[in-house]
Length: 244
Image (cartoon, rainbow, N blue to C red; front, side, top):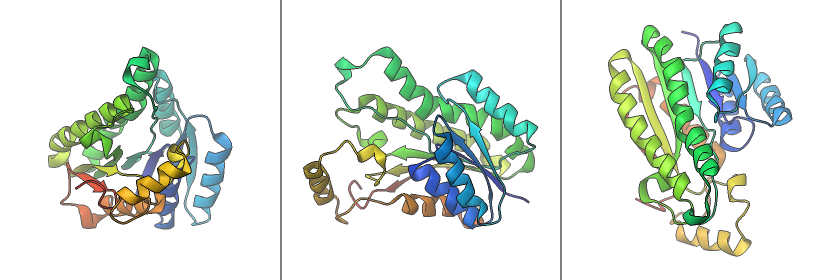
């Protein structure tokens, strides 16, 4: 069976690392991005160096109509992904009392509702093939909560419950659904931190450093492989021992 992956948020950070890793394994990659078209094109070029096909897909995951257009683009291009890796995500630092409804809704729509749309639209073809993989990028905050990131933590906690529930629905069809609860990964999401804060963060992590995007990509690589065919409904921590 030809394996085709859709990676959301693939223009940068973890999503880009995942796209490159899968391409290196010979998997065709559909690269979803929101606004960074040039960055997405650069990732696509890197992927094609491995001899695979790529397609770049613009979609605003906060908007159902935009996600529907993404689906239409995939159908018109005759790309039917049997691997979906949902890396797209947004966060916000600040007190809950200072947050407005739009910002809350945006985070829920991208981080959680995006997973709902992707599963609802691509799950049926995976069921029909009796093989498929969903991997969602969650967060350590979805399990333990986070002061100053209440909406983000809530969206990731919801994503964890969503992952477990969909895994139960799809297991009989040979489709696995898992999430990676990432800790502190060296991406632009941490760029707002002061050097002193980063130093303190490293000190709190037993392994003494931030994780790398490619380490997340390597875990994705395993979860979509046949070696992980008996793993589903799991929220797998990747945090250097920060929380156990």
